[in-house]
Length: 176
View 1 (cartoon, rainbow, N blue to C red):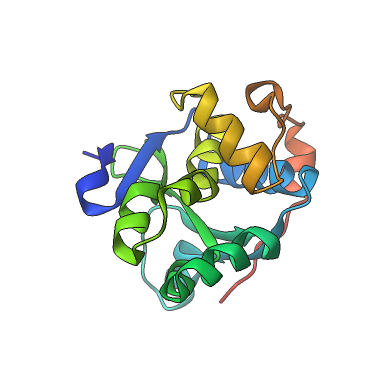
View 2 (tube, rainbow, N blue to C red):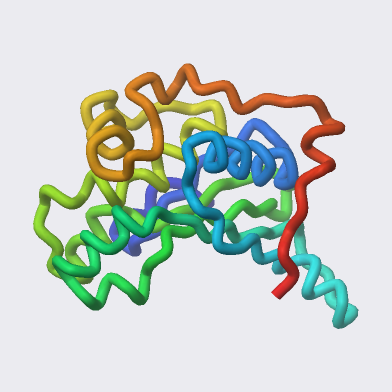
């Protein structure tokens, strides 16, 4: 079962929304905070093109050159794990999850200074915001979002990301 598997570097949080709604909420939140969405990879859509079926699964690749560059200057190998990623997927029971890399795992993997963890914690803060869960302590969430990534405000849980189904349907995904 998904959840906090930080010993493997993977953390999953349940989303209260469908895969497509979760992806659209993430896209709108990132856009509102001037983050760059590099790609949305539709794994299930690509599988379908070759006659295979898998539950709805999409990978959002996003970041900030300012934040990413500071990480890469501190530890060049972190580039293998950047831009940041959020995997939005549906399990066999039709439960939707948002999965991301543990900031501590990435810190240890690339021997990053501890003061850069908040920069890596942005993926988790976004996942919890869009999933409508907020277990990240405000102190860490605020540092991750306001000081390092310049992406989210100090009032992250108050950031509106809801919209009508029509607005959600207007989003586009990149096929890779």
